[in-house]
Amino acid sequence: MSLVTPDIGLLFWMMLSFIVVLLLLKKYAWKPILAALSAREESIDSALKAAKEAKEEIAKLKASNEDLLKEARSERDAMLKEAKEIKDKIISGAENEAKTKADAIVAKAIEDISLEKKAAMNELKNQVASISLEIAEKVVRQKLSDSKEQTALVDTLVKEINLS
Image 1 (cartoon, rainbow, N blue to C red):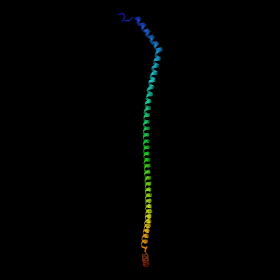
Image 2: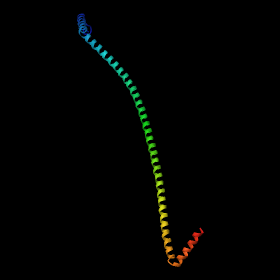
Image 3: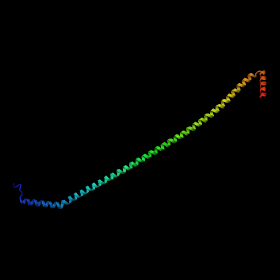
Image 4: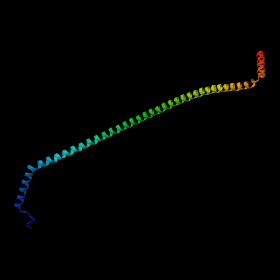
């Protein structure tokens, strides 16, 4: 049982060595350990603050990005609307121009057809007149080949002239 119950001398030396270790730790180890713990606590606090600031900055950037996206979408919509209006104006202008040109071409064609018709009618009248004269000349030659017929025709014509 002597192993279980300590001696007074043993207790004294154990206490003395404990106090010496405690003093040595206090003088040489506690300050660096506490300084390291303090520095670690400060770095953790600064990291937490930086994380909080980064989170706030990210929230601001998200809000800014959303605003930029809304603005970009509205600008895109405005540009699309403007492009559609320009397209409609160009199409309308092209349709009007095409209609005007088509109307002008139709009017010119009608005028050309009318002129061609008049020219054809004049040519036809001239040809009919020419053919009629040739026929009349041939008929008259045939009838007037005889001198009796010639005198009878001259007498008839003279009578008609006197009657008129």
